Length: 262
Image (cartoon, rainbow, N blue to C red; front, side, top):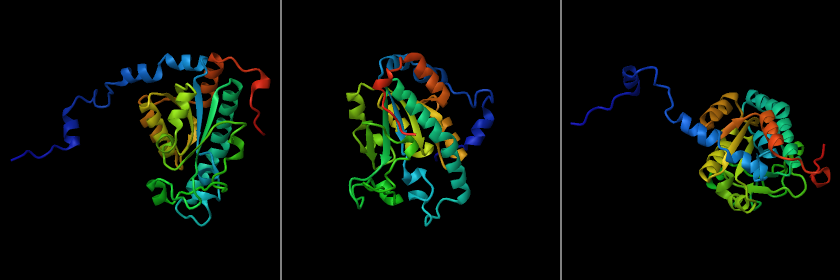
């Protein structure tokens, strides 16, 4: 007769409490993910890019797409929190990062949800089940003006949570000799998280900018950041990112910088 599995809390009671929450791999991950010297090398060689994820009307503007008036799935209180964070924190910080990258001659890449077809038949099954659809030329597919692309900055149109799954971004980044990525956008716990994990698995050095990302609740955002931290990505805030970039990159002459509106 097989033994009955022991419950987790019974096992914990028998263990030394000093070691229950100790991460035995913390130092290894810290050295390889957080302190990797290749990050500085990638900045100096301008082999670093900024990813701005889903900064569009579909999921980042009140009254449109996911937050349309006839969509009762998201409570009003959650919307008030989310749009307040976007307006007062995320959009301004993403714009600051974009300007910093542009001034230093670094790639700014914009990712959005947009189908190839008007009926969305090319979408991934996940987006079909969620009824997520932003068609070419629609308002939902438009970028938020404050953080929209400038000049010939690259735009990736995806129909899945992670951009690497449904686009040729990996191929493009390799053509650009990109080794390191700074990631911003929404939602932290969905498209941002999936992209960060995939990028890490594909060999990129990933930095997630905490105060340039958001979810519909603070709990979802904070939990995701805690889960990703020091495993798949380094976590910094906007000012820390800007200071690091300016420290290791020499700004381009003004005449060579793309100009953003506003």
